Image 1 (cartoon, one colour):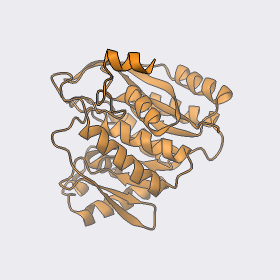
Image 2 (cartoon, one colour):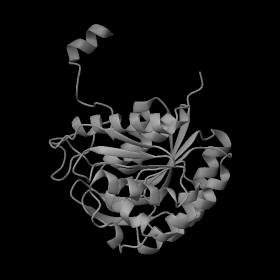
Image 3 (cartoon, helix red, strand yellow):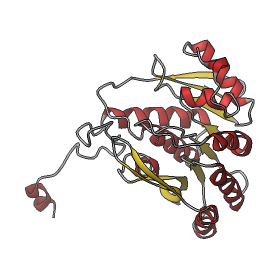
Image 4 (cartoon, helix red, strand yellow):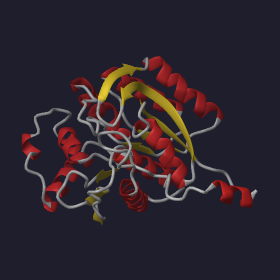
Length: 284
């Protein structure tokens, strides 16, 4: 059987918790082959981001072209972009892909530690250049407000959104910007429920909140798991359900002891069962 190949176009997290590092773990968790086109290098850890080095646009295009020509791309996850120039480069790079490849956009604006990862011009460029190409977008509530405002930080029209019905109207506003499906994740709302909207049907995807878990990389894990399931042939709603469950488990099992800040999620269950030297010897 052929293993689907999924491409992450996103930034690198030197702390290993979010970005392409989280994406590759999520892809492995879902049973697909992960590939990357790095948009930016970040110097960061669980406490904060100390530096960002954007990758030149032409090299982003070259990375996508290289994997598309040889391996092929069955789905794409787009994460941290940073600047309008990067958004335009990614828009060009997507032209290297075959028609109909599912595209999942996680509009990363702020890191878990609070660092701003998307400038003003880039927010507007995402709305204009990328949202109309998306199969699914996966903003959290603050990101959804900014996108609905056309990329502006003046989100006064949506500043009071908390209740389910208001979130539904916000999802409808985002859908009108062009994506085929919208998932507003529930991590920044009172109830840990994702809201899915495909232009016709609203579905609420309930799940547990894990306040004692570790959440750094949870959004990256969610969007990557969703892209992986689209590559596996799942319908968007089913893929959103699976992504919700996988991200929740990754937070629940997260590494709270790693770093002084928000610990990284644990999509692969690392550390849950370490064999002893004796067990390894018996298996050999």
